Length: 63
Image (cartoon, rainbow, N blue to C red):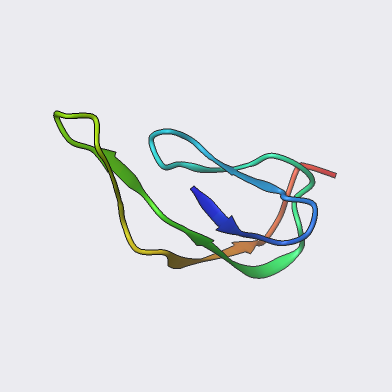
């Protein structure tokens, strides 16, 4: 789950945890905040800590 990201919400995260572009690629380096969840056999959610992920867009085809 993405907790915070640049304005315009350019990133998305898949159920498997892949970070993808969901909008126009911002230029440069940025940090987003994410956390992961898992479920036990009783379907109880367990949330991991919120952690920073640094992303650098070097060149984008998304113009």
